[in-house]
Image (cartoon, rainbow, N blue to C red; front, top):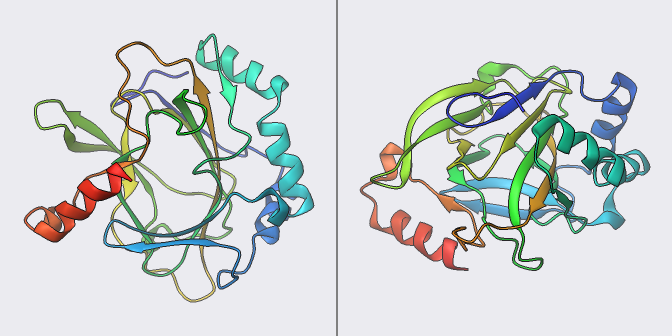
Amino acid sequence: MAINFPFYYQVIDNFFNQEQAKTISKEFPEYNSDIWFCYNNPLENKKTCNNWYQFGPETYKTLTMLNSKEFIKQLQKITGISKLYPDIGLHGGGLHIHGTGGKLNVHLDYSIHPKLKLQRKLNLIIYLEEDWNPKWGGNLELWSHNKEKNKPDKRFVTIDNVFNRAVLFDTTQNSWHGFPEPLTCPEGKYRKSLAVYYLTDPPEDTDTRSRALYAPTKEQESNPEILKLIEERVKL
């Protein structure tokens, strides 16, 4: 994997062939469909679906490929990670969609899978909304880590969510990421993405956290209700 600051990440354009990417995008359920699991709180505003029964044919086939032994062997070769395992249950992964007002505070992902007890090692995210205007927001921000305060320090990288662009990054290096500013996209446009996570054997000193750890925005830092929400959410 490319060695980049603040942590290891790689951007891959034209990840799928164009026809495949367009088909998966069209297979996304309607934004107001009742199949979505909805998050709507001051830390996150998004909808997700990891139910294989709800995936369209091309989406199902693609997720099967991304969790296959053959694909994981390629990831191991690219990253130099000797052991990687799929999460066929797509815990936290699958389809993600954000509409107007959608956001995701900068955060660290869960460390230990709550069912498999393996360490979350890699995120693979592929953006699937055509003709997205970066002015609407939703671009992935990567932040450095403040070790003393255990919180994000500075934003070092911003990655536009270009159609059919993939971002692969290591989640074990205090890998703060998110897009904390609410989207301003017009009606009918959505930030669509497909997310797959890969696991590895946990080192002895691994953080045992099984939920994401969110950071407050600058405006939220002095709000006790927000700070309480962060504390309660990470303990769920």
